[in-house]
Amino acid sequence: MDIFFVILFSYVSGSIPFGLILTKIFGNIDVRKIGSGNIGATNVLRTGNKFLALTTLILDILKGFIPVSITLQYFPELIQLSSLLAFLGHVFPVWLKFKGGKGVATYLGILLALSIQLGLLFMFTWLTVSLMFKYSSVSSMFASFTVFVIYTVREIAEPIFKITSDQTFKTHEIASLSLLLFIFFILIIFTHRKNISNLKNNTEHKIKI
Image (tube, rainbow, N blue to C red; front, side, top):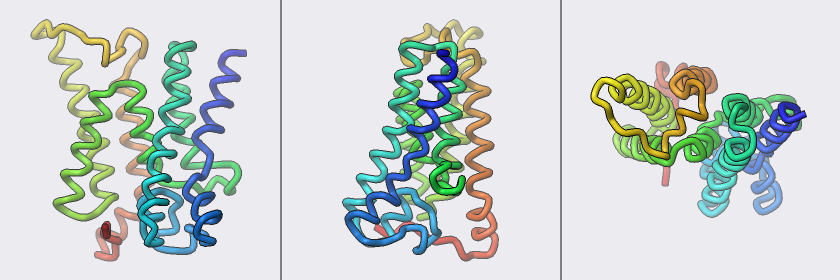
């Protein structure tokens, strides 16, 4: 019964298409018909409405943060399942015929629920790379890779140098956070496969603030 609840709640939470809902209600626009066709905050920004883009970003973060936080509190043994399903809910929402977004903001929400430090590392890396190259896709892929590498190196170094564990990294509750972060990195590469092609063809959209 617990696993059924976690599966349903995590997937449904992740699958709510806030970008599409907000632009339909407040802009009378189908965000899927502009820019990259994505339902995420970056594409909502291309409508010219910064407030809707920011709202979409916050809500997409929360739909990853909330289910994972609840699972971590009450069903810690199912935390990996909850994390993956919240992410997959955004990428493959049943309401949109399984055609969703890239999952980056939702992944950030998941990271913040698992570890504030990892979430901050992701944001710092994303902002730094985006300021340098102006590509959201490059920033997202590089930031997810950085989080995986930094955490894995830390996990290996901790027993060697006897680094004291803190409460932020809940490794006692998560069987293998390193493996989970690697899976997310691969999934984010997968959701950005079209962007990778666009980058090769020099047709990728840049971030415009």
